[in-house]
Image (cartoon, rainbow, N blue to C red; front, side, top):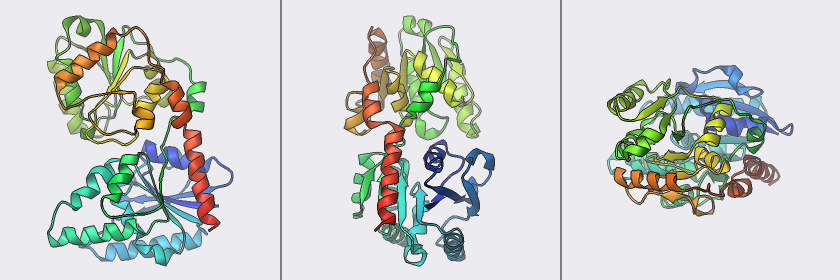
Length: 366
């Protein structure tokens, strides 16, 4: 079976999905991307064949979508594609406008911010341009044979726009096999609290730093605060967070560059506590990886799927003092939570990707 992905080759999440499928001998995988994502190392895709990039679907530059639709059609025919799988809805879902033209089954995968924040914003405005965008998104979202989302909340958000489809929850999940093969590589001198999300404004690290400033003197002196992704291309945001760290003179911070997967597993394994409080979220792999290691975890005041995150401590409000209080409380506990079993049952990447393969097979045989 030949699968064409429209995805971001620079995204770890997108590559996780594509590479898991590409490693299955039943599938031959191809990828196209947005032009803004075309600057990447092609070798990072492994055995996925990269077919090039398209400009974004534009309403004002009407010739761009016409050319893009024709280009997609040509790639589908030339490579004998059986399934066209678009990852991330905003703005990629708009290419589903060519569904009747393509004449192949189409799948959309949403991941969180795309359908929880970005697309709903277009439905908050009433000017003519936004009305056109609303119409195009509704038509596009209704064109998919199946829509998979990494959380139930995303499905509910799409339904609130009046879209009803064959919805399935398929999470990225934890690569359990890779973790089982990993060995300890990193060593940090004293106990530490891990803030594992990347350096992007949506991950709201300034909120975490505000809470750190409210911790007791004994906690500040006993634990190192570990942040990652200092070498992020979001240089303005890195500079902002670095400035806040430099002002926190009574706290021991360790600001690391982006680490490799095996090193990240070491950090989860050794961390005394893991904290993340993004502005928007789906079913975060980082949280599930912490849970796999039974590491105490605190999440922000967002709605998470109860079947996985129901027992995880969550903030009730965006109040730094609440977060600092919960951090102190978690650090006083002597026993680790037993969350690994939840991940093995409901957040195992192998099981989740098997769900996706079943969707492919069903659509091909319809």
